[in-house]
Structures are given as C-alpha cells and as structure tokens.
Length: 238
Image 1 (tube, rainbow, N blue to C red):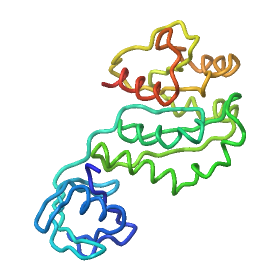
Image 2: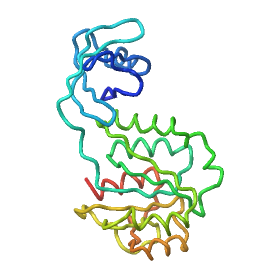
Image 3: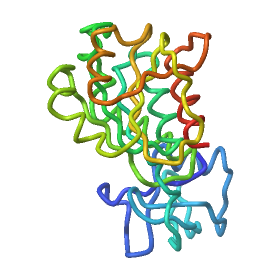
Image 4: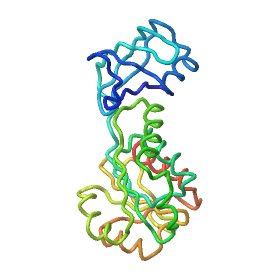
C-alpha cells in the first residue's frame, strides 16, 4: 500500500482536514508501515487530490490523520480498453494491473470463446470490482478510479456503441493471428480491443475491422491475457 486512500462516501472525515482510518488500512499502516504518532504517509481522496496524511492519534482499532492535499494524481492514459471477459481466477489480477497502469475506461464484453458462466461470477459484483481497482490505485499511487462497463452482448455493443466510444482514436485489435506488428508509442489516443484466451474468432475480428480497427500482433509467442494486457499497455504508452 503506497497510498492511503480516503473515501468521502464512508464517513472517513471527522473535520474538513482530519480523517479516521480503520480496518484494512489501519492494519497496514500499523503493522506493515509500522508508522507512529507524528509520521506522515502519502494519502489521497478517491477521485480527488493527493498529498500527505500526518498521524495525530492512534487507538487500538483506528488512527486519525491530518491531511494536506496539494497536488493532482498522475495523468490517466489516453486509452480505452475493450476486453473480452477474462476467466474469473485472473480477472482480479488484470483489474489491479489496469488500475496501476492508469487505464481509466474499461469495457468488458462477451465473445464466442467466453464461457456463459463467467457472467454470473461474484467477481463481477461492483463491490469486488471496486476492491480490485482500489488495490491497483494504492499500489501505483493514484486516486482516480477507473470506470468498468459491462456489455454482455457482443453484436449490439459493436454495432451500436463502439464506433462512438472509439471516436477519433487509433483503433487496434490484438489478435494472435494478426499480421501487423503492434505500434510502439504511437503518440495518440488509442482504443484497444483484446479477446479471450485463444483470441477473437474471425467473425468478431471482421466486425472490428469494419469499424476501422487494425488487427495487430505481439509476435510469434502466444501470451496469457494477464501477461498480454500489461505488455500491450506498456508498449503503447511506456
């Protein structure tokens, strides 16, 4: 936890500049950081500014901090990710990575190779999505929560929404059988589509190409989605 995130919606504030920290954050500060009275830690408001929090009081189950928030969070990546719903066991890790990397717009879509049961998994509950995103923000030192949009039906999403979402961005669809090498640092906003394990089927790739997406590859190696996602984001924006 490289950043202590404060939530305005959970009554963390006891005054305009003072907050009470408890639960998982309290345990981490006292047992991992081993912070003491008077110590200052990096802190920030969810979807707000960042700065420092100085510990002014420590109790058995909570502590209080005085906040000085004097700068903005890191800028978001100029990227929208359209991603086939991953397997539940890797979904949390991918969300954490995306939040850490600064991706703020994520569309989770269906695909022929996505098992129907994935859409009923508890990991898609908003509470669990938010938990994974917060862990990523804490790791990276960022306060701006990504927005995750669920789109269970492929064809209506591609036909009715995707063109507007992509707008004037560079449109790329990652695919193991692509023939064009993924560009490196293109210097423009990107909409990136990524399929499930095994990639999109050809009919789905055709749908993206009709909207101006270029089918790109990372080379001869076939990567797991949890590896391909940070690799592609880094290649485009490092």
